[in-house]
Image 1: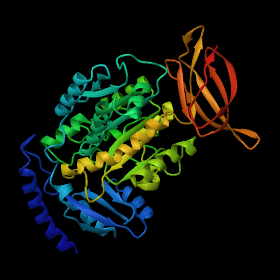
Image 2: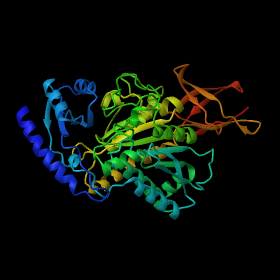
Image 3: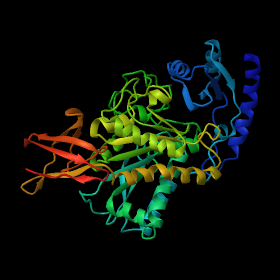
Length: 472
């Protein structure tokens, strides 16, 4: 078996080089290193097999839960190691994984051009913002969509959609661009879309890892991380919450899930953290590929969020609509620490999701013809979140003598039977607003803060959002 697989290695190396050499749109050197293999690891027990595989911190490209296998990108030496450890491993000839991206996928410069064009066409509905710079000094762009977009309105809920934490995952920006196009081109024509844009502030960041994506087009089509040194840091293992705590990342620079030398060491990580702090989204979707999953926090084995009845039920709704598997990272893949969704939830109680688009047969870089069906399918999920902003929950403002109170906590207890039980605590927004998504029921709110005399109120949450203001 080893001999036959190694013979196939030579064939794969030849075909992969030949396949990449014709991709000349962005650069002349777009090829995966010839010693790289895409292998299929078959499991008898999926969860146990994934746990063992994760201990090796290899480059797990994607998984198929139904058929109990993972696709892994390995060197020849790593391939031998997997076989020697007893894994059921075979080399796959995955055209979508091996050829490199279709030239119709986007570079950082093309993303900027497209966003600028949208802004120029819809100046009243959009605000184009450079939210920060990458390690190599490239601009990271986000587009805000809202009625009178240049003015922040504290009464409007905020939602964030972002693509491409991982550089090779080229379908993420396409989903994000489709969100922009769908909202802007149908505004004033579709009543529901018009309401979403008028009533909310919708932020879309199509391409986050701009340096890494540049490397995909110029050096290595399977590049995943940012451009730190000659090794890169996995931005989505670099966030401060639970950083490096549960074997959900690696301390080795050569690992694809290298978490960096310290929490939030990377400028890109700080760009996202600052944006989230500034806009305080109610919901977030981070688009990745591939595996057809909807992932919600928390990432470390056995951990769950306080308000799991809301976070997990919405995640499962999206999974049902997309026909994707829904769960935490440790339920569907493996433990993850230092991830963006865990940080967003823990720091600001954002309700965040990772959606892994495309199947194992599509891989990271499917034919561009798959773009249409993929973005159309994924509209169901992001539109569900925009609808849910109007659903059960509470939104309000905290003021004192007419001025917004910027530092406060909302402690929420939920009535179960005849007793109130601790449910969650929400950190208030700097503009004095707060927005908590809840299921219908009876709740007790306690407001506290450095300049606040503790205030309490009982409320009944029904199927539509309620407004509960505090004037101290």
